[in-house]
Length: 319
Ligand SMILES: Nc1nc(=O)c2c([nH]1)NC[C@@H]1CN(c3ccc(C(=O)N[C@@H](CCC(=O)O)C(=O)O)cc3)CN21
Ligand SMILES: O=c1ccn([C@H]2C[C@H](O)[C@@H](COP(=O)(O)O)O2)c(=O)[nH]1
Image (tube, rainbow, N blue to C red):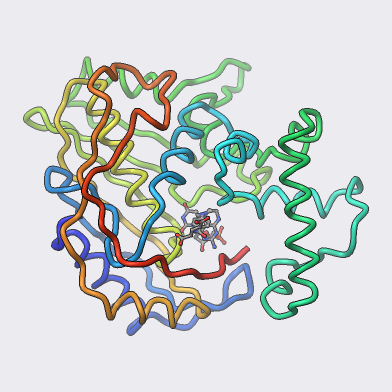
């Protein structure tokens, strides 16, 4: 990320920390929160991956590829050693009658405060992930997060039973009617939100073409500033690059619009540590020149060059 792009994120992080209102939340963790904010990233500059902490691009790639496959089962993620969605699938399993192990009620909170429980929890979650990989029928039942992003992007169900492939339509529209003001991709399906393990946080985005450059604006209804947002920025920047590549355009800007932007109360020290660091020049994204379609995209088709981040900063994820 150019230091200019990254400084905007850091400035927002500081503003939410200093001016955010204390607010309880669904996870009972407690947050500092602000409502309504906007960042603009120049994608011509460098790829917006933070340098003030190490952000694992591999996980971002496999998550985006998972969306683009139309998949909403964590099995694909586990096959790629990506564990960022484990807790939400595990939660469904431990709340089902098929779960016979030790009590996992309220694990999201308890594993943080009770070391003995944490050990049991880690072991149960590990067994769960192993079973998802080993047992197809089990994976079909408990790896599924409900109709989250991938399903809505590629298999939006119409009332008549037919499906809408929003990604294929978007690629077609960008190619044929680039001036359109209707280049929308939405994951927020009111009819299905209740069945999802987690209602989509990056709810809707719009694309915009001007003078051969493709821009993207995302509306994120709920934003975990420390853990989720660095992923979300890189993921939508990558999606914009991929769409530009297959439609023969250059990249323009990524505009990130926020609803509830929050820092979890238990991320405070980590945020202060990050804010004490100075950003450096960001990396470049290299896409396989032979790439012409978003189908059969592989992780190795996407590479970054010159990424020299400072050390990772660990923080617990609120479930
Ligand atoms: N509270 C919360 N915040 C989120 O950002 C979030 C959710 N929930 N639920 C669904 C997804 C899952 N996402 C996640 C989950 C975990 C990490 C995380 O722990 N990232 C670590 C690296 C993890 C690793 O290396 O395995 C990081 O340092 O960025 C990031 C995004 C984003 N989303
Ligand atoms: O891509 C994502 C996914 C999730 N988040 C964060 C935002 C919130 O902290 C939680 C979701 O909780 P809700 O109660 O459903 O808002 O996950 C994110 O930042 N980015």
